[in-house]
Amino acid sequence: MIQLSERIKSMEESATIAMSRKSRELKAQGKDVISLSLGEPDFFTPDFIKDAAKKALDENYTMYTPVPGYDDLRAAICRKFKRDNGLNYTPDQIVVSTGAKQSIANVVMSLVDEGDEVIIPAPYWVSYYEIVKVAGGVPVVISAGIDQDFKINGKQLSEAITPKTKMMIFSTPCNPTGSVYTKDELRELADVLVKHERIVTISDEIYEHINFSSKHESLAQFEDIYDRVVTINGVSKAWAMTGWRLGYIGAHKDIASACNKVQGQFTSGTCSITQRAAIAAVDADPAVLKDMVKAFESRRELVLNALNEIPGVKANRPQGAFYVFPDISSFFGKSYGSYTINSANDLSLYLLDEGLVALVTGEAFGDPNCIRISYAASEEVLNEAMKRIKEALSKLS
Image (cartoon, rainbow, N blue to C red; front, top):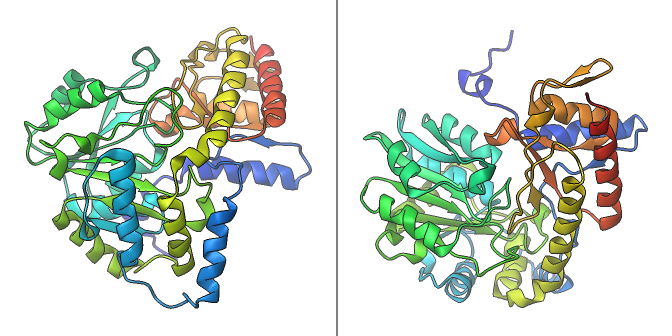
């Protein structure tokens, strides 16, 4: 009999990937399922990036790559950090990985020991919690509900810190809520973190260019905590390169060196062709993304308007990314046919079975009162999906 490790037995499957799998299974059965479960832009990679990849093939960039990434890509990432975020990094502070998820895992594995506490504001991206567990860390969740726009404050952070706290992980713009921290809100968190020299913060900024209201703000801009912030970014979301798999960090040299060491034993350097294409992406003026961002903003309005017409649904106005995270707890205790809704998980499965719309339960993101709706789909698809959701919810009583 195969004996799996306790490590893998304690690990939860990614809820977003699980829901995507379930929707594919129903589609294979001939059912017309609309999937709004994955965080993947429905745009294609821009031609100038694809051209860079084709050129790389013609120039025979087909060999192993340096573990932390090509030197000229890391230099380009430094230029991007300076141009977009006002952050000064040198190439030896950059490590390129196979997606931002690996970048985060590298940092956690490099810094977190058994029993170390890691603060994770909730709602959080599904993998933060599991990555910390695999590293032997103890996730400490701070909840920030819809009334707080899903953002924690300095008082909450201060109260969560103990002598065992080693790290905090958060995202802005946030997956799953779309909430965006302002400069003042980040400064409030920084004022707490600066008092605790042991704590390193992972600032996940993969959605930075999908921002509807203001200039993106990076936690590492504050010089008094710059050395203790790891800035995570990549090309997946803004540049519609999810399948290319490339993320990166900007960090203190000691952290970057440690991540280089971890990555050297697990995957080595990421795909050569992807790296050449990524140079074109990070060197490009983000202004070329304005049409895509405008499309996402229009879709946000479509989804919010539809949700506001559904009695019992409570939604805030997210300022970034491409998600809405409505509170649907008013439906708990209601039923239809053989379905009884006692949780967000129940409601997600009900909407999949009855409405043929795949969403993700908020329980996976640390908020059991909500569901995540990705609006990375055409307006036509979104209109139909929201119609189905409204009809399915109207049947519950």
